[in-house]
Length: 379
Image (cartoon, rainbow, N blue to C red; front, top):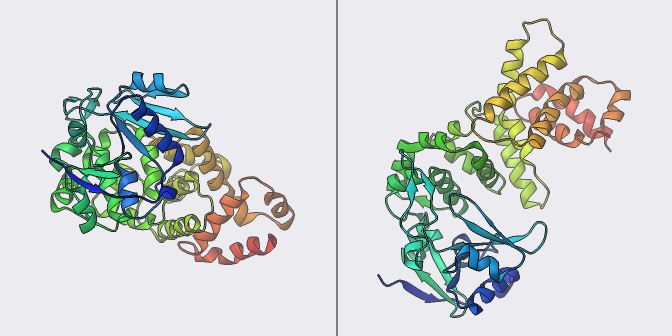
């Protein structure tokens, strides 16, 4: 099968210099190598990609011999991270073959079979992510109609959606994310398959879903992603204790505005909002027993967080901050002026304050006066 080859000279300012170094170094070592996937999709749309992935004919062991500061990671499929700083790395993958090892329900459990560029294309998920870029020739290589689909703003699966979602159910939530990010439509085949196979997300380890959650909601269109997850019945397999509310809507809109303004966001805030109603409900159920408010809050918080971690992992630092946000709501609602000035110096105050303000603007309008009090006190 001959690919479509299109000569495109991308703006060099949009391409990461370290990614270019990696590609050129691997090419000089005599291996086939390309920029691939989402970075090519974004470059074609005129965006500056956040990440640059590289695909090559070199095995992980061969790549680590070329780069001293590199390491092999992964079990299901081994990748190489080439380190440029404590926080920056470029990910390099060896071309994958069509052969995979799956469990009884079709989920891929081992994918360490190496192949050719042509085989690698058909191991990727969506056509718009199946594009390769040859740096030396300034050429986009397209075996799957990704260029046309990107132009038509449609998300299509490479292969049969039913089979591809069985292999990796996480592709379903990625489909929603790409649909929103690219302002595209889902192919009828993908839409139908997601609606039927949403339950397969329950098979994914909670640790793997944590990073996907960050990608889903820490962006400028998070509320649209949220509505999409609801529409296709996917949200309940990520946050079964979460139900629609104006508080969640207000928070996601606020998150998007913060990202657009270049302000920081934290997943702790997101989890705290998504689980707030469940925490309140459990607190009220426990409140029948004669215990202190703090004891009840701690018990309710721990129970709700424990249930959530069965679906999506919450690192200890994150669950600790979520509990801090919840515990401080009572203090923000009830403390006197003397203690209020002390509370402002608490390192968690700002998150708890923002949480209170959003509550006052949505589900708890009776807290508006209290929110204004804290706003004025900080001036």
